[in-house]
Length: 278
Image 1 (cartoon, one colour):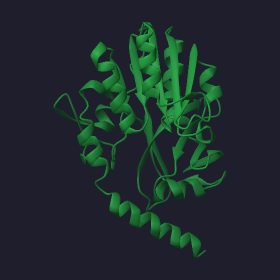
Image 2 (cartoon, helix red, strand yellow):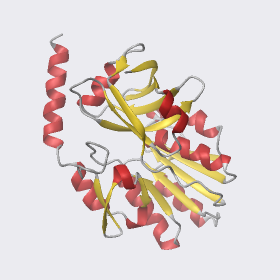
Image 3 (cartoon, one colour):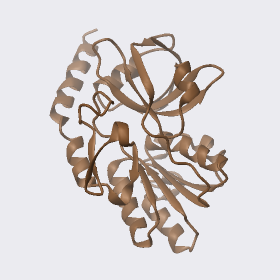
């Protein structure tokens, strides 16, 4: 059992949660994730480890309420315990001294890219961060990211804060300004990652993306999280979660993410009805 020690709402549907997991806290590296279950009959869901405190034996998670399980998780309170937490899972981000790294985070993906930014900066890179959200109200971790990178550019789709527009335009502007870019890390919604890869492809700028497909057992046995990378089948839980974005079949990934969309809607509606009846 893993106790929740802190819970904060970062925006209307994004929650930051700190949980006790000393073994994971002592081993985790940037880019790795955990799989958790809220209760004995609950669904397993993967969440990236945003941060950790080895002295307190805790890990930090940031998640968006998108379905029944994340809604259940968001209902839990400080002092409650999760039924199970497994990790750290997946390959860590390959961190080295690249030179100039541009890290792009969109939506809740900002939380996922934060530990990558931190690790790249500690490795001696110049780190330029671009983070974007639909509106200012749902932008997260601006101050935390500003504190660990060399330059931060904020965008909002509606122009309510920072640059008016998408992160793709900011990245294109950086490239057009002759800014030397050695590598790009892009984490966020699938369409965002796909179009960022199309921006960098003509220039041959290596672009790493972090994928979050449907995942069941997180051991590579079930095959639910399979993706196509460079024409080969990969299992995100054991081969990823990070891949060369120029080789990812984003169309297949998008299609597979919609596999259980009808069942997910039914489960969420049933959960809401039961909550209303309490």
